Image 1 (tube, one colour):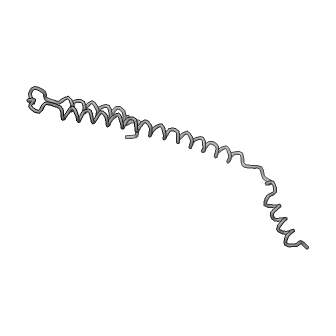
Image 2 (cartoon, rainbow, N blue to C red; image 1 turned 90 degrees about the vertical axis):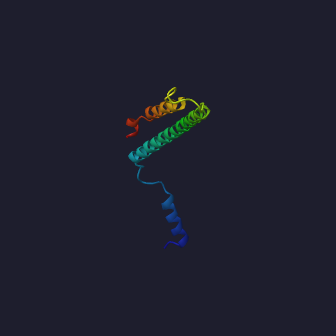
Image 3 (cartoon, helix red, strand yellow; image 1 turned 45 degrees about the vertical axis):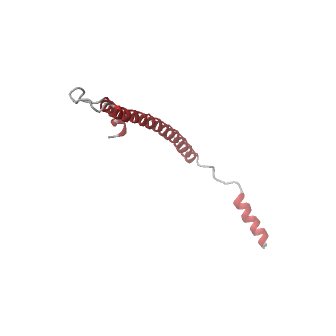
Length: 109
């Protein structure tokens, strides 16, 4: 008959013994591929946010420059002399740039 200590030792020995079955190589391969894809996605996400911040800063600078142009335009300029102000034309160019930059086909719109 086994004592309690021997029974505990036997159970611990069974728990910590080497596994009889070999690891599932297909599962390990799938996990490694998933981790690699997650790393690539994280790198692409960081690059996309970095690009977005840069483009946002550039766009903000352009909008501020256009706002300054709009405010600095002469007030007494007759409309027949200049139909569209330079800031309005520049804003049109900015919106066209946004339309090209967003690439609606790439975003799924």
